[in-house]
Length: 141
Image (cartoon, rainbow, N blue to C red; front, top):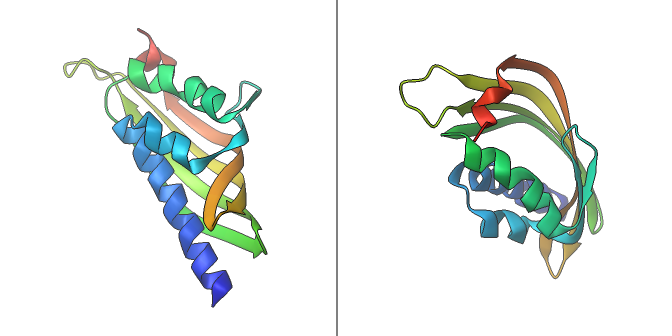
């Protein structure tokens, strides 16, 4: 039963992180990351909670609405550590409502988790983009 609860808690954290990105809720995003979090979204690793948030923030602040949809969750729990693989399909629209500019990715998050004080924290994320559609110009300021 403890493993099932841990899997559920991690899945909820994954969803909270995606929602935090779409809501531009940087504090909520930071609360899910460990202090020593490492992330690689395809441009090389970024180390540290604040640095991970700072690497995501300019992209999401530059575009209009976004939606990060998650699915096909695989979560393996071993005591106070865990590993998850999650499909992600994200869509980013232009800030200009008249523009048809958009950017989408189909990818996979490979994540490592640690439980500290009863809370599952994301300590490592690697995003593998399998496909992209559209233009990165949607992130231009």
